[in-house]
Length: 243
Image 1 (tube, rainbow, N blue to C red):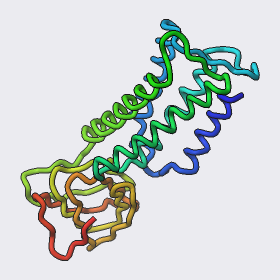
Image 2 (image 1 turned 180 degrees about the vertical axis):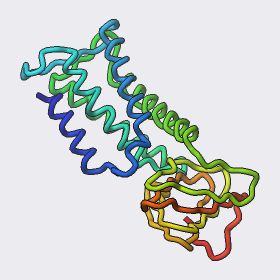
Image 3 (image 1 turned 45 degrees about the horizontal axis):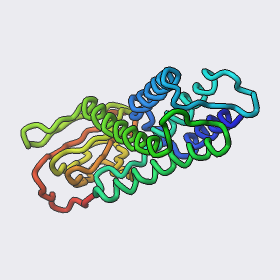
Image 4 (image 1 turned 60 degrees about the vertical axis):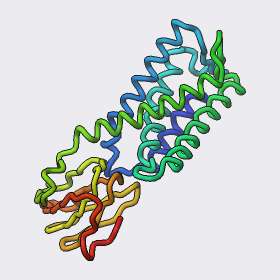
């Protein structure tokens, strides 16, 4: 029963906190989290470092117990971790964010141990789990950035203005640039997400996106949106608000 409740609680959190329009951006990292979880389950069988137990005897199978976690808390936690990550903010702010999520993970494991739902064996202990949590969260974060960079359709080109279209309801994935980007909407409406905050831009509006700040754009209309981007080293376009 506890594993079923954890599964249901995870997906309830997804329904409440998910950004429905952009959940696809996080699928690769969520799939990696599930693969990592399944891999550790297999390694655990061989090494016998920890085991799970359902005291209610509803899930007597080891495989069923692990699948509830593999398809519940792992992908949802990964999604929420990446969705609200403080992209483009200071290293201390990112460190505090990592700290909060790793404390959440180790607290959940401590609850499992205290309740008898999980048992450490051999040389494994909570400190090893906590160190592993840091490595896992960091690996998922770096993997997400790598994937989004590869998927990005718009590239910095020659420092000159880039005039392009964003097709109906299409999304430019979350990404950042090593330099400032001046963005102008020529036609249509787009939803611009900057460091986790959203705003709508209409034709004629401009925005200066500062270097290294994570941002994404989505066409809100059934017609292509036209945009102009100008990339330059730390220069602010006149009369353009700063993100």
